[in-house]
Image (tube, rainbow, N blue to C red; front, side):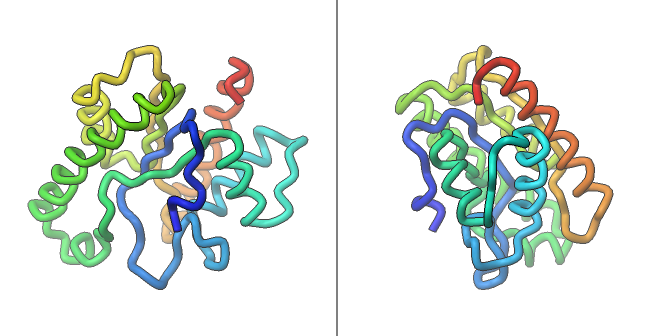
Amino acid sequence: MRLLYKPMPIKILMIADAPPLPNTHFFYDHTTQDTLRKCSIEAFRKALPNQSFVDDLAFLHFLKENGFYLDDLCHTSLHDTKKSKDKDAIHTIRAEGKALLTSRLRQYQSDSPLVAIISVAKEIKHYVDDAIFQAKIPSSVLTYNIAFPSPEWQRNQLMYVDSLTKILLELKKKRII
C-alpha cells in the first residue's frame, strides 16, 4: 500500500520507526484511524491553510503530488518487541533497519536530490543520522527530528503537530513547498 503513494521524485522524506501490527492502522491506509496521519493532517492544515484536505485520501494524494513520502527505519512491526521491553532486540532490529534505510536513502538521492529528511521519533534519531551519514546525503539536505505522536500520549501529539507545523512553515518560507 505504501508504494501507491510513493512520489517521483521524493523531495521531503519522513522516517518513522516501524509500521504498526498488520490489520490495525497504517499511515497509508486511509480507511483506518491512524494517529500519525491525523496529527500530520492537523499540522499541514495549520501551515498551509489555503490547502483543502477534504478527507484522508485527499491528504495522501497531496503528499504524493508534492513529493512527501513516509518511510520507516524498520519495515517490520516492533510492537511485540517493544511490549517485551527487550532493549537488545529492539536495538538489533533498528540496526538492521538502519542498514536497509541507508540503501534506500542512496536510491532516493540518486533518483532526485532530497530536500529535507524528518525523522519522526526521538529514539530513532541516531539510527537515522547514521544512515544519512553512511548514505553520503549532502549536508545541504535539511534534517529534523520530532517526537512521534503516540496515541497514548496527548502531549506528544501536541508536540508533533507544533514541531511539524514549524518545519512546514520553514519549508514554505524557503519556497520548498
